[in-house]
Length: 196
Image (cartoon, rainbow, N blue to C red; front, side, top):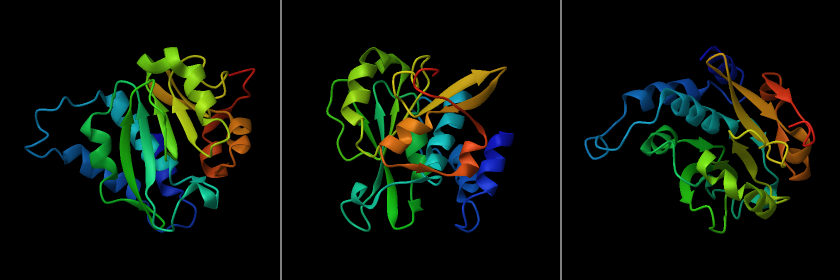
């Protein structure tokens, strides 16, 4: 959690970090209608917070948004490890003029209008096809499978000694027209597709 606190407090001139507050609110948020839904593990709660905060530390090219106030879409591909937790975390949040929304996709579904895509581990069997579909599309790809960055994914979660670390393939992000803030990069290990 220390890395989250550091990241949340070092946002690029965008005022006080709502991320930590959103995380605290999301932890206490579970309406009666969603109380029956399974709560994700602590690991995936932290990963959900990272996904939310990645949106604050990445710049997308202007054509990535159909309109000035078009939503920033986080897509989850395959079985969803976050459940309603991720939805609660981003509810009412915006990046600039863009409200954040979450959409879910099957492994074989065409991914449309996404800005950030998390590929769940069970969908890794389709990883080549998913990454090929998104290549050069201005979409930040995130996953937690072993070969994610080697195959061209951009951000990989790695669990080491009980802590979540980041591996970032800056080359893949640049090729997609994305700019990742140095404030996020300093907390990650930078990799190339060959070394992923």
